[in-house]
Image 1 (spheres, rainbow, N blue to C red):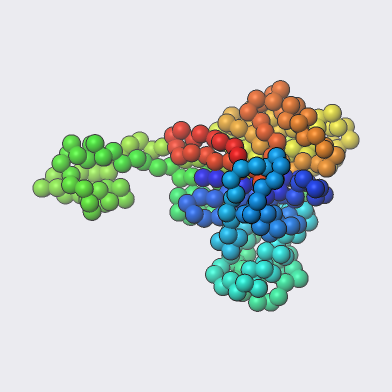
Image 2: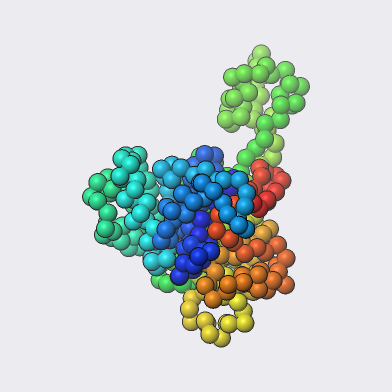
Length: 319
């Protein structure tokens, strides 16, 4: 499982930060969360060469393979990139469905974007509500309400629980490799020489899957703590430093210090600070601020990637 941060800024793009866009890669599927202005170009840059502080392996991303996009809310810095992606996919003659999820009103918003009519042929739009589960192979995505505007959501990306096949037990029971192994792994019982062997005889206890939470824009709220409980990675709005809290109390955002307090209360394993205001040319002050409360905090940079190894280790590495 991998996270690629395509855009880490907020409201205004800068020479170092694009606008919000977070890509999750899981079992060869690509999921895009928010789509700020220039997201498609960020994908192209990420797939070619990396520069300066963003050194590392290229992240080869085929944007035509993005099949699901989740929008946290309808502010321009989170949705303007949809025009470019939809228009280019249409130009390249995409015909397989792409699903776009968002709060109430997203259907009208998408249908009124300035894109060719043909582009709407492959778009499927879904209006979401809190707790509504989007399921797929091995995962589920759950929206939750945040405090920014009336229709603003965060998202939980959670891997479903798994049970490991214990081959040594199967061998001890005399089960030959092949189709019988597959049946047991799929939860079916088998008949071996008149003896019924069930999945529970050769499968481990359930192993909790990996969990990523992305808040989008939000003020500090208890709902985030609830849905981010025991997550591996919390990607939280950290637009400002706490030294500016008096100036921004009505802006609907969170400071780095407040995000760290939320991560601590949610028992998150790691915190990634995103949606960084252009006023902080040196974002290290935000990271230092967060680490005073929650040590495993990191300011997101454009094109940063984060890998989470398979359960139960769930080891996090940053590139």
